[in-house]
Amino acid sequence: MKFKTRRYIVKRKHAFQFAFFGINELIQESHFKIHLIASAIVVFFGILLRVSFLEWAVLLVCIGMVLTAEAINSAIETTCDLVMPSRHPLVKRIKDISAGAVLIAAAAAALAGLFIFLPKLYLWAVVLFK
Image 1 (cartoon, one colour):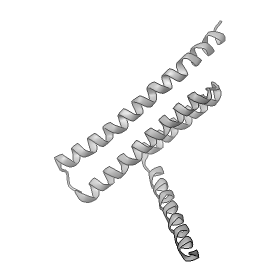
Image 2 (cartoon, one colour; image 1 turned 90 degrees about the vertical axis):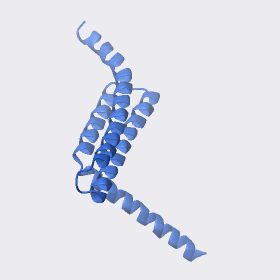
Image 3 (cartoon, rainbow, N blue to C red; image 1 turned 180 degrees about the vertical axis):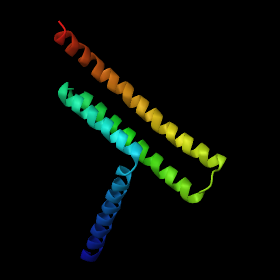
């Protein structure tokens, strides 16, 4: 029984190591860096404008959704480049659809951010310029 438990733990450890290697690879991607910077800006404004617990939940889900979409997009593009190094109309279509999914996620996150931040920024501006 101890051997099975130890083997299970070692497998989980390796799984986490591979996941962290993957995150390290993602951080090298320029588009992922852009989304990370945007996420940091959102977190900064969330702290500055003191968003509520529920608003934090929405913001964090949106950040996770966009970063996950970008990660999947990067994996799909890398796979396409491996399978078909030369240009092919179907590979272009796959990459375009994948990029479109990231755009949809980013647009939804931006709308959620606007709904959360605009009223707070408006109140802040009213107080500041009164």
